[in-house]
Image (cartoon, rainbow, N blue to C red; front, side, top):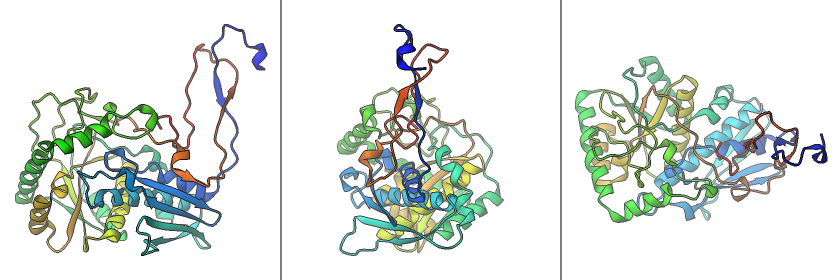
Length: 370
């Protein structure tokens, strides 16, 4: 039906134009931008070339108070890199990854190139989970992760040069709680920390980043969790239930690396995303409890008591919980450079039976909430 044949009183409706098949590198870029990141800052830039994808850190998005050395930023970029690797494998391509290839340019985190050879089938199997993965801050059910799944997570992290340490002994669980509580308290007592948090929780929806109220537990001043979930409810408008029930009865793991440098942080981010996707495939959810590794004194204590020679980089709680809403993604054009893929554009189409406009995602990490 042409536009002229639509009754003048009918509201406009939309359908998507047909898009040519993506190249593997375009698909890798699209998967990369769906990665989790600290405070959903999405601190990366992607540059596409005919034969490679370059992944760069965007230091303008670094959390200067929470993450002054860029550890969390680099882990976020590592998660994006892992998603790109998964997409390449799902496209049936092998790939070569050069991490930190230019010592003179520490902002260039990695270069990924398609190569001849078999795809990594273990990575390809994780591709459907890239879109389904969510950071979950809800109350978890009582069932703990089975030992066989924990062993699988340990092996998955090890492939990415990272140790996954299950926290199982009572004294270690108590210690983790005793370190997380003061770390969380110290952070929340810092006006600069709270100001930075507000900047990333009160975002204009058009920016496509930050932590929206739809994924935030409401904080009413009565929370006394053993292991406090970070308070993102800076406006008192959190839409998730206030009771997160976060404590030592849930499954807890620590990710740690043998060194504490840029490469180790990048690899830990890859390991973190691999673990999260493995959990998503199996119907489990996870959320970070990273306060104790963000405060130097508690991080040192955690290392000496739990990870010993390794450096703790992240803490996860894992369990079962209802799904949470997806978080926004930045407009693709602001993240991906030199893209040859056409952008899906709405065109006039047949009116919907509802008689109302129907928003549709552009499917490429654009301004809609994907």
